[in-house]
Length: 74
Image (tube, rainbow, N blue to C red; front, top):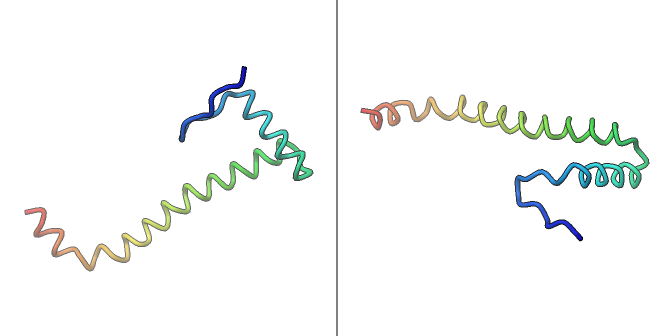
């Protein structure tokens, strides 16, 4: 019996993940470990890169609105 698809944000069952990794590695002529490492690095940079970008934008833009933000806080 086929499994239902996972909802967004849900991790697929472990066997499905292993099979997907194996197929992906096979298609790209890489090892499963290499595929896992590459995905981990991509995830890290995507997550931390967005956070770093947001921090830089806030550091640059918030001072322009400091007085308005302070008045709103009163």
